[in-house]
Length: 402
Image (cartoon, rainbow, N blue to C red; front, side, top):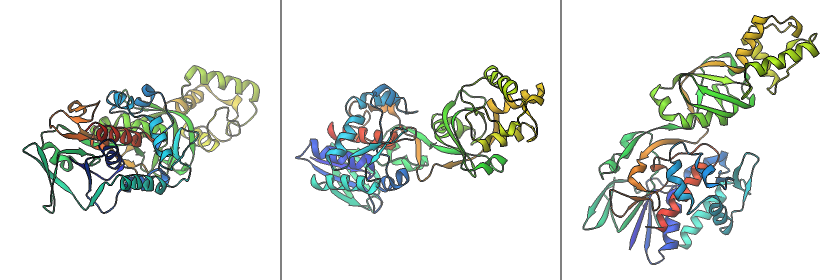
């Protein structure tokens, strides 16, 4: 039996390894459109490769996927974070856990991960064909005929499609022609552009516990907010961009974002802290006494935003000034005008509709002998190693149960 794997990224390579491991008598051929395998693994995590996330509870792990949460729960019962860590350790890549739960190879080099995957494929005698851009798949007498853009033809009994995400629907037309239902792709995991807003002058300042909401919607997130020279980034913003990906695409990335710089604190809680500052430190200038856990540069900038002078003392604050200051701290509104891709990572939501795929096997419900893995599926996770974990899980299952 010949098993063809389309796509030489994380999911495709892992699917090929799994297929060779579970079906040792089969011929495995991996087809990659470019001249390089695992190019996304190479640049991920700043060149260190965020292999997975140290989350070992399946329900919590699945909750990090805006699309694919329920679908992946079944998959994680077969291959989860523990299995990922174990596989890489057995293949010479011990992982370490950082304070935020991200897991990297102890070498801090993505090449270590690439070498392990390439070595495993070589040991399993996976045949790799580069420069093979598949544009059409036809069923002929129960077998699949794969046709490249150079009219090269490859026949296979079973096919695992791990071709990755596409920025445009046209890039998935060859799957639509097979009868698969495809959801139009839109970007996920991006930062917010603010144009010329003066807060961008604080680039590099990070506030660790910020509540970020999209005005007029149900979408909100809690976490770090990093101010950049173009706008807002950080875990809270990236998570929000993922969960609200389709909504924000519908807004053409023009929307208002509301920030509570104090996390979950409300107006009455802020007022109590103000009152204590006035009682205990009334003679001090507000710019020199910051009673909240936010950076001083941000504190002084927000004072200006609330029209509060650097010279004013706590005891001289009027009620209207307190109201303005409270509003800025817990309900600060900015106009977002566009997005920026997060570092070198490009993640999309959209792709193969999960309703048409068996979550236990990754098998297509429309086409016998076709399986899917990785970002070609309508699955995407928040930042932190979750997208790679989905690749390892879906690739392993597709290769195992083909």
